[in-house]
Image 1 (cartoon, rainbow, N blue to C red):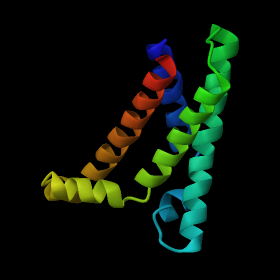
Image 2: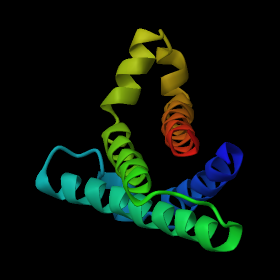
Image 3: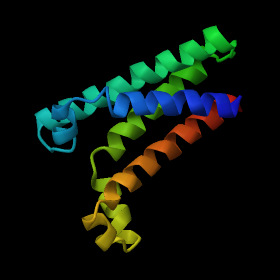
Image 4: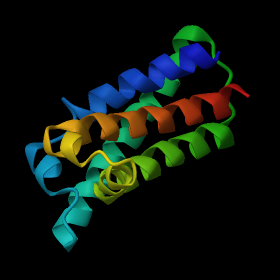
Length: 130
């Protein structure tokens, strides 16, 4: 069941992060002002909804048996972790700690960002499958 949940949540992530994210959200979600927080939370909300729909499709089409509370906890984890990662400072701090300044200046931040998101999705899928 883990693999199925992971694939469903990964596809939901891709849908929410790319076609489901507005240019405004992408540009401002890390800003420290109220507009930045609104953009960030709206984008995290998109992840919550799309991931919820993916789990619902898994239940209906594949017969997955997911409890309401575990599913809700997984969705909150996905949305919450996404919001924190997208503030950009966690990725920047990691890259400093890992001595990746050169890679950060040459586009590496996007890869570290996506790795953090996929790790969070993996944790959610593991928790749901347990």
